[in-house]
Image (cartoon, rainbow, N blue to C red):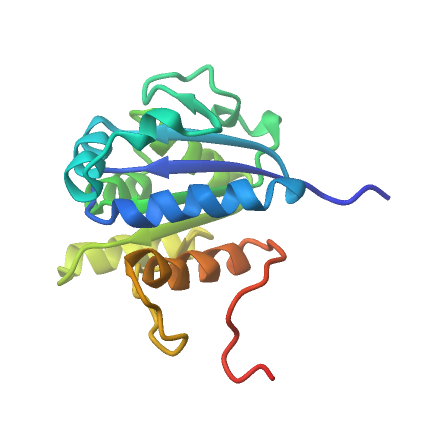
Length: 190
């Protein structure tokens, strides 16, 4: 039986935390042997936030296939393409709300809708704080529908030395959640 290779959608929204998206894309590049395809969709706000927070336009050089936020011909806009993982990183509260409400008004929310209806892995890396009751209820709705809320809450027990290492503590957890094999810090694993 051939080894399963993941087909991954990465959606990047305009929430603060572009470093998380950057580290996620870098790590997926390193895990290419476990990947059949990666499709990336990025909102206009995400591009502005990336440029502001990271001080560059390196998102223009993403090594994976990128899709316009309105490209409903992207393969992951349909369940028949069999993309099995979607990671929204970072995930704005507006995107969370649209996903929770079933509003598929762009490629990100359509792809998330596909993941939920097909019972595939959907990870929302929420970044805002504090949370309103509306945010919490939207998280509850997505969780009850089969999605996973994985807040961008870094850990410190691996003694990260810079922002990218700190972001890696979140991204490594996400990659574990979706089933990638990786070499990463494990608590008390001697």
